[in-house]
Length: 118
Length: 106
Image 1 (cartoon, one colour):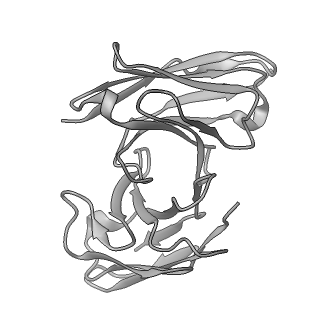
Image 2: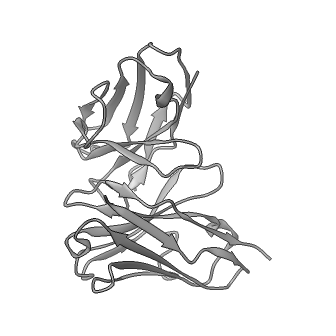
């Protein structure tokens, strides 16, 4: 069974940093692209970033470019999202999602809540 | 950026009825379109990819159609478990974009 378990969320002040982690199991992590998708409270889904199987191809949403960094450690089956210069509008549940060869997301974690507030 | 627009925002349906949800793209995405279901407090679940291919384990009452800029998700006979919010997502261009969602309620 595919499982994605996010952690690292919490309350942080504006301008602060957090690192999210997503531990994967139940599939060959190194064979799949991975993404982060977020959802502000009561709002819809917003794609944040994607990383290819080896980490050589990375894309970001304009809203986080230059502030967030996605990475992965295939030896640990773990996806990361380093978030710097956090803003109130980054407040959201952050989901990690498995991306097969296509561009859709076929498995999602339960999410971790990031709250940016003073 | 491709803007995805879903309609209606809310769809009121009775169990056993047919539900038709629409998704429009601001430019062609070919058939690079997926549909997700999200229930309160849960993560999204993939229903459809490639505009019309059901994901593993998705009941046959869910079907997708369309290409280019107009897409439809049809639930042939609504069951109580189907009341949720549904999102479309395009993966033809970067950034990937989602529609704002359609809430299917009783």
